[in-house]
Each structure stands twice: as C-alpha cells, then as structure tokens.
Amino acid sequence: MDAKVRQKTLRMLSNGVYVLTSRSDDRYGAATVTWVSQVSFKPPLVMAALRRERNVFKCLVESRIAALHIVADGQHEIARTFFFPTRANCTTINGEPFAQGRTAAPILANLPAHIECQVEQIVDTEGDHALVILRVVEAQLRGDVRPLTVAQTPWNYGG
Ligand SMILES: Cc1cc2nc3c(=O)[nH]c(=O)nc-3n(C[C@H](O)[C@H](O)[C@H](O)COP(=O)(O)O)c2cc1C
Image 1: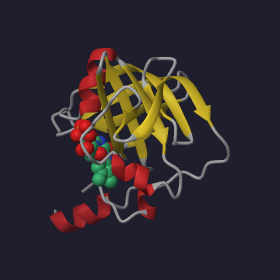
Image 2 (image 1 turned 135 degrees about the vertical axis):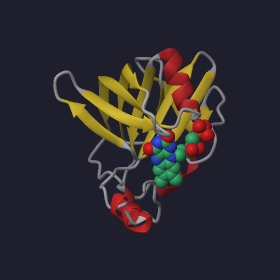
Image 3 (image 1 turned 120 degrees about the horizontal axis):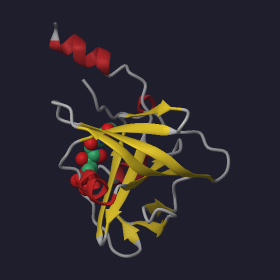
C-alpha cells in the first residue's frame, strides 16, 4: 500500500465538525472532534473515536456523561478554540460560555445544537483512539442550522 495514497483517500471520508464536552466533578474536557457517526436508531446511539489522553475522554470515562455539539457553517473560530488544551472556570471553557445540561455535561451557549449522552460502552481498540459509544438522552436545536463539515475547512484529521 502506498502510504500517501492511503492518507489522501482516508481524508476523503466525509466528516462533520463537532465539539465534545464532558466533566467529572470539577474537571472539564472539551475537544473539537470529527471522527463521529450514528450507530443505531433504536436506541439512539452515536460513536466518537477519541485519543485516550484527551481531557474529554478522561472525564467521560469517570462520569459516563458527555455532550456533542454541532458547529455551524461560519463558526470556524469556535471550533479552532477547542483544538487547544481544555482551560475551564465555572462559567467558561476555553473562553466559551457554558451552562450545565440535564446530565450535568457542559453545554456551550454559542453552538446551535447539541445532544447529551450517557456512555454506553468504550471499545478499547488496538489503535491510537478508543471508540466511545454514546446513548442520546437529550437533544436541543436552536434555529435553522447548516452544520460545518471538514471539507469546508482547511483542516485535516485522518489518514
Ligand atoms: C480538524 C481536527 C479534528 C480533530 N478530531 C479529533 C477526533 O476526532 N478525536 C480526537 O480524539 N481528537 C481530535 N482532534 C484533536 C483535539 O481537538 C485536540 O487534541 C484538543 O486539544 C483536545 O483537548 P485536550 O488537550 O484538552 O484534551 C482533532 C483536531 C483537529 C485539528
């Protein structure tokens, strides 16, 4: 296999841009993620692939809760904020305001839609990311949203 062709081809998989948040007591984690997909209609399950050293992964392993936010077209700057290590106080994460959701996961006020989830299963692959399967327990949508996709950005995560 040609490594360059493999990288280019895998980068053609269509992915969205999301921000995943979690907390465990007074520790917070938030990261922009793209390796996300729905896994089941009934019950509603989604999956996210996360590196084990991510703060959001460490939090959700402990608390078993997380919130997945849709980033809208034009909200590149907010997504970029969550490429950087999590810095939280009681009202903001990486400078973005949040409130506590139904599950106690942090809900980012400036992103237009989110789901709140309970961790259903963590599949510990041999790879550099673990697969987290999440059960959707709450969903909120504010207005008409056009979701941002990786293809609309100069960013890459894959290969
Ligand atoms: C375009 C892009 C997509 C990303 N997608 C993922 C992803 O799907 N899973 C993951 O674990 N990290 C992903 N990351 C990395 C996290 O956004 C980044 O490491 C973040 O700083 C993690 O926060 P932390 O340092 O507080 O753990 C991605 C980064 C970029 C630039």
